[in-house]
Length: 285
Image 1: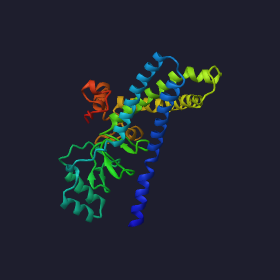
Image 2: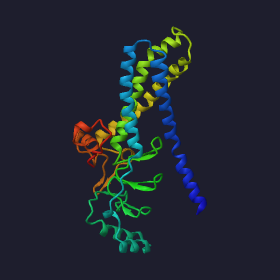
Image 3: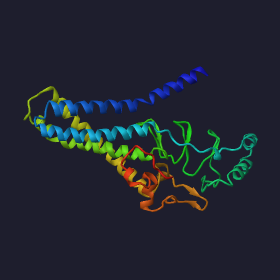
Image 4: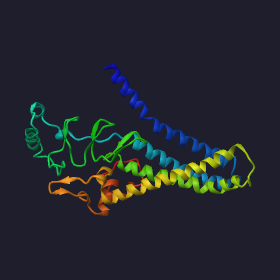
């Protein structure tokens, strides 16, 4: 047991490496922009003030949404989806799949379930020992069933699902804004350093590299952000986009769509004043 426990601890520790990498890049970008660009390179006080104001605004929103995405725990199925003790014992003792399904059908008779397995059976997680609610999937990385699971993201070391999908979308949005702002404001100084219009100083490396990093992240984040906006508009998760959910009447890729406006409300909540803030979880289902 001890070696297994040590291995799991090592795996959990290694899982934080992508998050630490992003944190280090962000810390360096903050130093490079604020100190090397705004303080040591830009001469105009007015330009410094404007750049620093909007930079810190985008920086705060980016870090805030990233923090909420990482540390918001995934939502799990409620107790009503757990088999009663007697039924669970019967299920574990039963060897025939048909008999096991009979037990699950009786237990699920009063539950709000609309999706099925590909074979039309009740979706059940043997690992968590729960009847899976609609849109719920088991995450092997988190070792738990996650409500409305979208995917497990190594860059946040967390499952993206019902409880933090809004935060994840805002994280992508504000990281894109952050990178775009840096790339747009650094561009003129990047050109001046590149063409030797500005003298070679220790700021040159930071400014040149800052532009390349910001532009690179812009391209990658833009594609991912656009894809998830499309998913929000269709009310699909990443899992459902690749494999259509199966309902009582068969598979239907648009089975959860409520219309464009209601699909957005389901993720961001019905109070528009909170849509751009990662402070409140307002997802309605």
